[in-house]
Length: 278
Image (cartoon, rainbow, N blue to C red; front, side, top):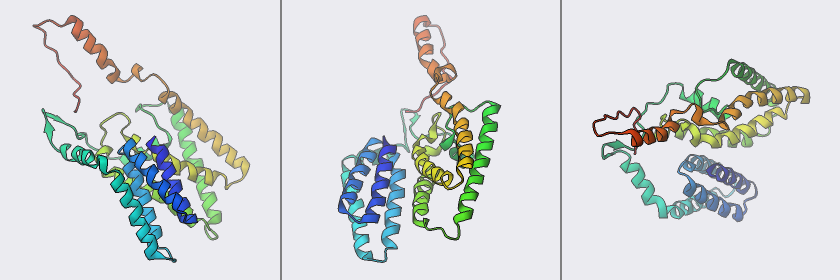
């Protein structure tokens, strides 16, 4: 749900700067508040739209002071609207630095060294499992090669007469700003199986850019790229919609607990190999 409201607020921010209608600014505030209350991860999206709004106001050639005042009013309204839950949010951040009853709330796992490449891959080919078939890897390789080729073809033809710089910059803001803030946050540590779920919003600017690129090449070549790219998604879709209990050991915790409850004797020693944080 936070991804949906991230998309909605991004659209409203873009529409406001195109048409300068107050209804878009008000709707942006409301959609941002819903996204914040839905999930804290919305802060990554809000950072992108906030910086984009600030950039547009600071570079405005008409009524720059007025645009900056509107920027402050809009985002101050978001801050006050979230004020009802701000105390709880700050408590969550502060208490996360301390241990309660010997348990740490903050993730203790170290970030992987290929985190950037991993997240970029999982944005497209999301999979909860670490291993995939070699056929899936072959199709993925060709998909990357064709997408790269399509991008070169698209931008190579339009680089000199490119008239969509502002649109491309907006997509860059929506992609790079949330990604950057995520990398420096504690959520980028592998504390759960799909710990990069906080960046699901990045699939939206990626999909827009991908469709933009494919639509700019010849239809036969575009069809080839689309078919191979779609085939590369099939193994991941089947894994996402499959039964995780067949391979994920966390699904066996309940069964282990039932076994211990039914067979435990006072002289038994129970060793737990999986530790949970609070």
